[in-house]
Every structure is written in C-alpha cells, then in structure tokens.
Length: 338
Image 1 (cartoon, helix red, strand yellow):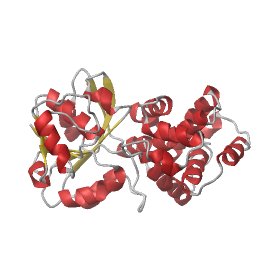
Image 2 (cartoon, one colour):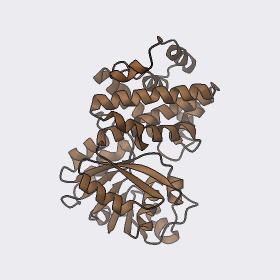
Image 3 (cartoon, helix red, strand yellow):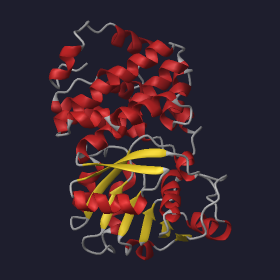
C-alpha cells in the first residue's frame, strides 16, 4: 500500500517508520525541503530523530501533490497548523481517501476538534484518529507501544489497523472519536501542571493529585462534547495522561517544570525544538470550559499561568483552597466532577 505522511516532525517520522516496517511504500512530506533532502540522502531526520536510522523505503517529498494521492494519509502536523495543511491537501486528494489525524490538540480560534477541522476541509474523506501513550523516539526504535485508533467507520478503522499494526505497534479500535481526541488534548495541559508541580518541588503526592483530578476534568469535557465515559479508562485517556505526566521525555511536562522552576513561558519554549501542544490547547480548553459550563479548575489555572501571567504560587493556593467534596459523587455529572 502507498501511505503518505503529512508532517515530518518527530511523530510523523516515527509513524513513517511504522508504516515502512509493515512493508508499505511511504512518502514523507514536510514544508522544509532540507528535511526531505536529508531523509533521501542520509536516511535520517536531521532534527527530530537524528539518532534513528530510517528505512530506505521512506521517501522524502517536497511536492504535496505527490503524497496526497496515497490511499491512506497520516496527518501529523501540529494541531494549530491542521486547518491550513488540510486546506492545501484538499486540492489534491482523491474522493474517499482515508485520513488519520495524528495530532493531539484543539483548534484555538474555533474550539474545534481535529476531526471537525478535517470534516470541514476534506468533507469527502474518511477520517480516523490515532492517539494514546506514545513517545516518538520509542515508536521509531520499534519499542512496544499500544495506541487507540478511533473511527466512526469501523470497517475503515479495521483496515487502518491491518495496515499499521504489528507486534510492537498495537492499535486498539474505538468508535469514540470525540473522547479519544479530548483525552489526547487535555492531558497535554495537565502535563504542564504536573511539570509546574515538579518545578515548584511540591512532591509526588501533588503530582498524583493532579493526575487523578485531571482524569475528572478530561471526563467532564468529554461527556459535554459527546464522548463516552469508558474511553477515559483506555489508552487515549488515562494511559496517555499517566505517560505524559510522569516522564521527562514529555515536552509539556518539561516545559511546565521549567516554568515551575522560575522561567518565563518564552524562555521555556526556547528549550524545545518541537511543538508543545499544551500551550495553545490551554486556551481552547479554558474557552470550552466556559462555553459548556464545565468545571476544569486545573486546566483553567494553567491557562491563566501561561497566558494571563497569573502568579504560580497564588494560583496553586487558590486551587488548594477549593471546597472539599465527595469523591464518588463527582462521576455523576459534568458539573460536579472536580
């Protein structure tokens, strides 16, 4: 099968290696021509995964049209770049092309999930979402990984799994395309919160509390948008949340740690060569929280710290001063899960 990957960052390049390992012809596109040239000449990514040897069957492309004709397209551009990328792609793809959204975020300007952006830009395409606990470097190295593949069209989802699945990359099929995306987006903001807790030396108990109460926030927003509660307990929910909130490999966690240690957002951002999705997504989540009347105190606090320059210690004190509640009652409604 011909598989196209749109976006040659760390994640797109890692997914290209998965497709190549499964015997497919892979075309990898990126707007930076030097990346395509390096992939073709040295079979390495010069920036994102410099220590990973790429399969020679992965071909870098500078012309988007050459990649767009593939039957299966993996869209691995940052969430805030999804709409312009799909607008450009829509001019070239064939009807009923299958698009797999591989970005984790919510569009800042509209509050749209990535699948909604795809439906608007490429209405004739079949859309699926790939999410779950993944670090690109480990996927590229062939280390065991499990992910969620969510699709409204379950037949299409099964075909994608057959194309990409192998013993070390195990997709699990879901029909909850909304809940899968909410989990993947919100966990990035919560990882920043955990990083700040680390940077402020609040201890492992505090991090555990953020993760656990973060589960409630993900569940609340997911239900409000039409997601299923059980998705929260899967790979794209608690699986991705735990990984991102506990590992130094996480861009979002690392950024939060730097901010917690006293660096400005701008200074912390310069430490990462890759997109830190949680920074923009924090704005989207705060807006959706207000729009749907859903309490998300941790996520909204992070948005205030990042974008309103709220004082970290004052913000933490306000969170810790919230009223005590009955834990089990929290699962009964979107308003009370806090």
